[in-house]
Amino acid sequence: MSAINITPLGFAAGAQVTGVDLRKPLSNEDHSRIHEAWLEHIVLVFPEQDLTPEQQIEFSRRFGVLDAHESQAPSTLHPDHREILVLTNKMVGGKKSGTYNSGRNWHTDLSYTSRPAKGAVLHCKEKPPVGGDTMWSNLYLALETLTPPIRGLIENLEALHDVSMIRGIEQRDPADVAEMKRRNPPVIHPVVRTHPETGRKSLLVNQRIRRFLGMSDEESQSLLAMLNAHATSPEFVYRHRWSLGDVVMWDNRCSCHVALGDFDQTKPRVMFRCSLEGEIETGRFADNAAGADRESMLQAVAAVS
Ligand SMILES: O=C(O)CCC(=O)C(=O)O
Ligand SMILES: [Fe+2]
Image 1 (cartoon, rainbow, N blue to C red):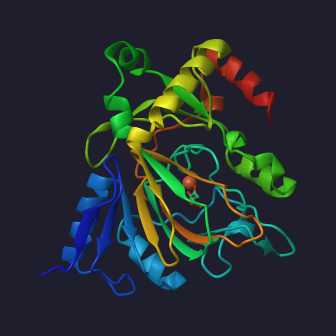
Image 2: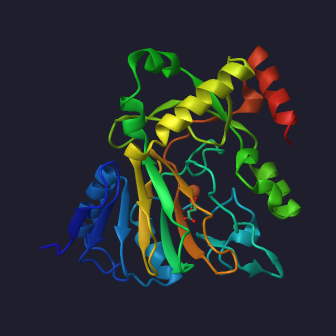
């Protein structure tokens, strides 16, 4: 009998999972309960865990293929385990870490690649005394609550996602930024996507979209502002206040999130993240787009890079 307890933490997303020690291999029964709860609650919080990198990797691997983080600057990876991305505001090798301000605008992990992440497992290693919360939004609800006329407008719409839109990227080390851009040319994804496991549709919008295809800049910017405001309405959001040792695992296929920078930056905040590779390629590179769209996209991109 599984000793796992699942308690909802929010209406739109979030549940706490207790009664499981993630240092040990998961039984098949525990694995299925967690997997089911993950699909239902989108964000799962496992409090008071204390995992070595190997244990975090083993646990994460049960839920998908681990990303070797080719999209990231090598200096941001754990020196002994490239499956672990180190999110830290500490100095690394005598300079600011490439992740010191990661996640500061609403985003879906790796939507700036052709294969957005399936999910991620984030382990809190050090935290400031106050602040530095993370918020997730349920993008199924965001889609389902749009009115029919807007839903019709976006049904077949596509968006250009651009790594240059990461908030604060210009403050990072120029070599890291150049590397990120080189690794991640702009990519196009549909605005409405289907979750490969639940079959439900969700709204893939976030603050790393540069524009929609086939629209003027004015149309794009107004629509994007409206959709982003809607997608991140408090009604759809779970906000997590971190405690040391928390492990939080989220489903990236139906959510977006933001890491708040509202904390004393002289205090360390360190998170270890395993990322699960996306199962499907939903994007195509902007370079392969046809005709007028290609031209206008390339101009938009040239203006920023
Ligand atoms: O640091 C955090 O709370 C989350 C950062 C983030 O966006 C991520 O790990 O994907
Ligand atoms: Fe993220």
